[in-house]
Amino acid sequence: MITTPRLTLRPLISEDAPHVFEYRSDKEANEFQGWVPESLAEVKEFIQTKIATEPDQEGTWFQLAIVETETQKLVGDAGIHFQSRDQVELGCTLNTAFQGQGYATEAMKSIMGFVFEELQKHRIMTSIDPRNVASIKLVERLGMRKEAHFVQSYFFKGEWTDDVVYAMLQSEWKG
Image (cartoon, rainbow, N blue to C red):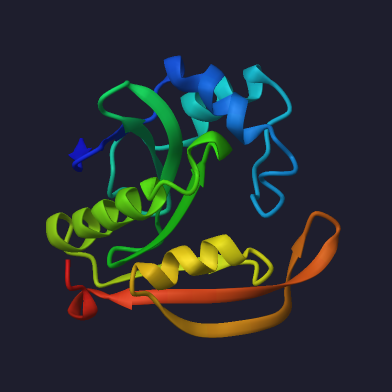
């Protein structure tokens, strides 16, 4: 479990499914997300079978619930993809009702600290559709640097899209 001044980040559990479905099923708000569930059952299956139960298992995604500590409301979720022994990919989805309040920045900064300081990973990266301006602003606020812009390299939702990669090395982390 990771805590910040306003948030508690803990593993996503089955009881979170209705809340996750509420914000993840919004096709318009999640136009750049790879996973937009069609049903509550799909979210339950995802939580039970598609994510790791413990962090730091190579080749798996570990999903964290982002919970507002004071109200205990689930405001979003964040994923850590353990790509290899030394590198991870991060992703974040926030309920639109909680966007614009600094929760994504607070949550992601705390996850980066966990990954670099506790797990001692060498590199964190993220892959973003360049049309997703809000996510680009988020990773730039976090101090990640743009490493690449791949043109029409990713077939997504029926079309070839660009992919922008941002990253940070452990040696660049300032906490």
